[in-house]
Image 1 (cartoon, helix red, strand yellow):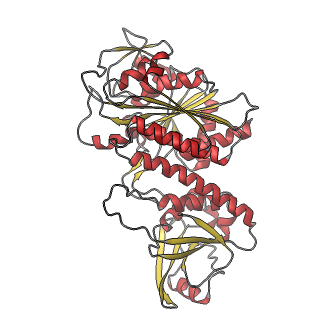
Image 2 (cartoon, helix red, strand yellow):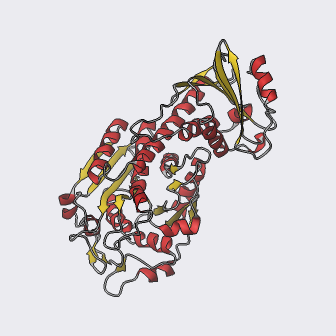
Image 3 (cartoon, helix red, strand yellow):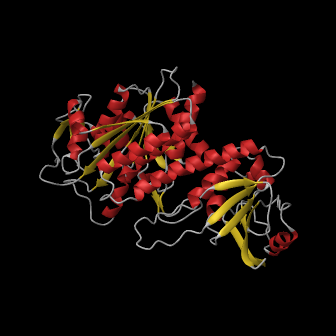
Length: 486
């Protein structure tokens, strides 16, 4: 859904107005449109973000829609409010034809306002209909944003381009999460990631089982043993600042299907376990966006992709594994597999030169119990680095919450026969899972658990029901912050 800029407003089109309570701003409307807007009583109350009204009229024999979407009080306007209003607006006009969008002055004055509008518009209109035999046709629309004469068009075009690029990166992650595991095997994920990387200008390399064996990745390989699908370690590189010795390491959990292995999950809800690669999808989308934006930063992305299946070859509860860094792990549950593949992947990222790291994973159901589906949880080993990550999330409009990383929790993952055990039990599971991963990094690191925030059951704002694509925008914002830092 492309968006274009225009300085002219035609009556022969659908019209969509964003209205702020204390700044109506419909001066660009024709007399006919003004009359319709007045009839709509287009004064949204303060704080009513999801305020929408529509009317229809016949112009030159065409039935056209005029819609008004409220954003609340101008003084309280935020980029996230704009995203939500734009997401709602993207689903209001469903007829073919041109759509002209008029934005109030307060949105043009808001830093990042136009970019947020574009993000929300394209994210809110997302649909995944690949598997319908007869998908409902999308409306044939051409969308224009009316640019006031006091706005520098070059700046507006740059904001439009960046917002569209970020939305595309999020929707790439959403598409991957929506794809069923019979089509998105580890090998297929590696193929798609390599193709996306090449298109974005990233260097891509894929390690197979033999390569991982040579690197002594005993934790990652153990998880893959139960599946007939060979594990893949996708490695993406971007050198946006060759003069810098700093490299941002991004690692994403890529379990393309998680049955739980021998510690098999209940059948109820197991179909959702195709989303256990959402961390890898988020890292892929973010890395592609970083390259397409041409950010002056070095990025190393590592995506461990495996299937966790039960079979006669699968690893078992009670097994002791040796990770690539030499530490031994007693397996209590084969359903605590994400931390095992991340252990070896993070070690590898450090070996390849990452100086600061973030991993993102649908690691635990415990995080959803703790934080619901709104926030992702964070565990870290460096308060300053965690602060930069949280600031990036805030700037991007994504919700992260720093969990307590009290070292006393480590007693729960201490084994009597090995260095660690891969499960600390039911209580504090999101914390102990993160602390386990932290045993395999030495550089500043933060772990983001998106186990609850990976998907929504209901459509709200710019988030249609289904995968949220959380993490993509935060990681890009973090990369941008790294540019400014050095």
